[in-house]
Image (cartoon, rainbow, N blue to C red):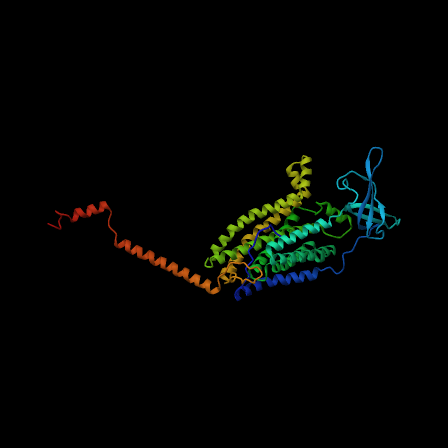
Length: 463
């Protein structure tokens, strides 16, 4: 979730001051109420209806047991493939697949390969046939997921465990609420906003703890999420995008499902920018807290400027990340346009590329707006609200065993008093130096000669 930036959360959080808690609670309660009401109102009543089909398709695992060369006509070389079915009505049986020509994806089938086959049963003729569907990739994918979990937990420890649990809950919200609600005919834009807000509440508090810093980042995320949705709605309608810019959208329309493809495009913009937006707001809030902990006497404007210096670098790198992510996903499409020798203006104004342009720019605007907003909120909370920095050093038996000792409220006030006293002492020292300079003042040399001529021998005073 994010662009891989590190946030220092090793030290536990001290409770914020009562004033901060009241302000943040009063600000976040309307978002909580709106999210709960929206989720309950949009929750699908029943499983999504399946369109009628003339054939039933079932995907089963199989193992290749025979590959033989054959022909599919006078000059076309093909291969005959037999597989042993695992599961289904024909479990353990050997079935022949249709003869395969040499083509990408199937030209490397060998005896012993584990594949996925499609078992199609026609409802009209009651005839069953098997065909190659895909390679089995479950084992390497699970191995990769295990390596990912080990790395995350090994580096982030309990924070990594919380992040992985949050990732699982995010996926659960998507498959149990967002997708079924859209298929149930609800507005994709409303579903995406409600689902994204719910994900942020669960994900941020679970991964970063319930504290003032997380609440500040959450508030910045929710505001900019609403801004992203508003801008997406405005410019998707202004550019007259229909949502038919991808093959997947065409397939959905062909399945006869009643889904607004334009709304589906808006939902994809919001959910796609959610992870990067979350990363930016958490980073900015964490930066402000760490700067404040290093110097608790800094006023709001200096703290904001220091945070924005970090935020500008963050914006530059993250906007590039977002744009390159979309460009990488559309790279085959861009290659096709290049081969077609089309003008840049024609390519950009086309439905397919225009969708990606709107998606990238709208997401980037919300992303950029989150930096000053979150930085200002965090600066106000941590300074004027009297929020505490992280508490003192954790004991040796703590979960993390790390963390810089943070000043207590008494130490913060003592540091502020010392700073005020130091400023007063410096002003007094400057005043003393000025008084001493005035006492030891003497006129310049030319003026000294003039004064000497007037007071020396032969002057009127001596006469």
